[in-house]
Amino acid sequence: MQNRRNNSGNSNTATGQGALENNSSGSNDTADGAFALGNNDTGGNNIALGASAGSNITDGSNNIDIGHTGISGESNTIRIGTGGTQTETFIAGIRGTTVTGGIAVYVKTNGKLGTNTSSRRFKDGIKPMDKASEAILALKPVTFRYKQELHPEGIPQFGLVAEDVEKVNPDLVARDEQGKAYTVRYDAVNAMLLNEFLKARRQIDSQQKQIEALTAGLHRVSAQLEMRKPERQTVLNRQ
Image (cartoon, rainbow, N blue to C red):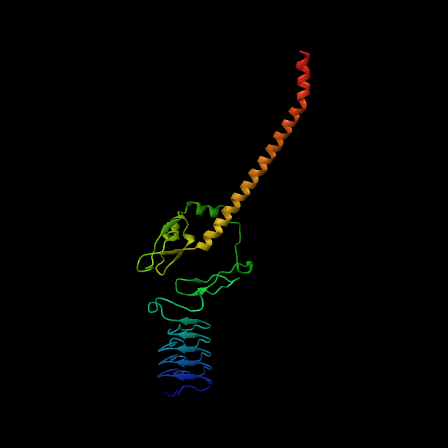
């Protein structure tokens, strides 16, 4: 279908009925599929693959939408698949590949991927954890198996129950779309565990110093007693 609205856009590729049909000035867009990027007007450098892929984009740029309609006004975003339609993900080249010095990837409730940063540059309100970590002392680790429909292999698992953790400290759980406890923030639990370990270690070191001081005192008293033995023996002999 010919695009009669395009007046200044260039270097675009459109394949499929209605693909990029409303583009006016967007450039370097690639739309492959019926109505892919069909509502794009001024957005550039977008890639859309699949029927109606990126069809919600009007002026956003630098998006990659594969099997997803995209989000209006969104830029610099990659979306693959549609929530509720694609329910499982398999990616080759990950399992069995060793990577060192990397960071863990987390998934938000809406499916957004990201990582946690630890640098001071990104943090406010930094203060010692102090007694806040004592909450983990009330946690109850369990063994369990996932339900058959979730994990047919039935391999024994070890961990915590999110609802139980929520009762101890609501900040230690991540929630689903309905706001219900979904999983445990094990990274936060590990940080609390480290704090409790360090507190216990400091207490042990303090007790060790006290023991050493008491031992040294006993040695001094013992030495003094040993020195006084000849005097006591002389007195006894005189008697």
